[in-house]
Image 1 (cartoon, rainbow, N blue to C red):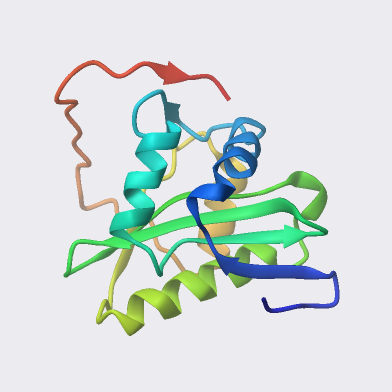
Image 2 (image 1 turned 135 degrees about the vertical axis):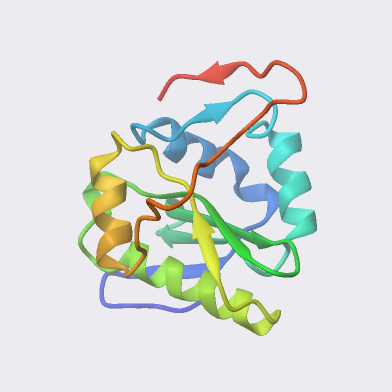
Length: 153
């Protein structure tokens, strides 16, 4: 595990991290969770498919940050990036992103995309600061295969 001056360690995420990560996501406004994809089974399935590209930040055994990253062989995607409010502005989000980007690059991925809710001002400011540009030339489209129950954050 890598240390920094704040005694934060960054390491690959495992299924055992689910409870801590999920609790963090519930405390993050604008996260956009649902009961299937973000269930324990859904996240464990994602981690099996992307075993080297998802990371958690820990402080004294507690998860204080998380990033889910994966790819389809062509493009990388980032999901559910969050850092607890008391730990923000310490470089943790940037460190998580760096780990994910390096892991994706090691798998031959050269472009990364993400979706952030427009009203998520904190998240959008972070992504802008990290060099992610808003694409106004695209229309994002989504369709559920079947109904999904959303979780309020």
